Length: 154
Image (cartoon, rainbow, N blue to C red):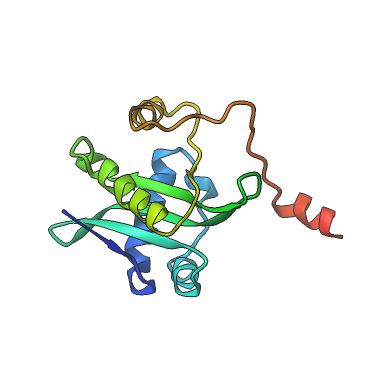
């Protein structure tokens, strides 16, 4: 098992893992990104990704980007996607990805590592609790897209 930073050249593997995550989360109908979209995001620096490989095959992913923690007056990292292929779970690979991302967070001087999790995903919620993550109570994610976004912009 090895973990490395992904580049735009790895967009196909990153794309495939994000698609597998969308299937797992029952959100495949929301998955619209192309491999070229992912390559552009990685190439532009809009996000970064760690790839976990087993025998040269990408089986895990942690995709992240910087955020601002205004109340703390610091930068943070947002973990957008954490995924390990189901047949590779239970081997410590998710933990290995989180440890590497925690190392990047600390070494980069970031104040926190944050992410969200679907409320039905109890295996992940339990796992996050075991590593010391604390759920943020009282917050509900909001998103504005499509027609509603265009209407507000007009």
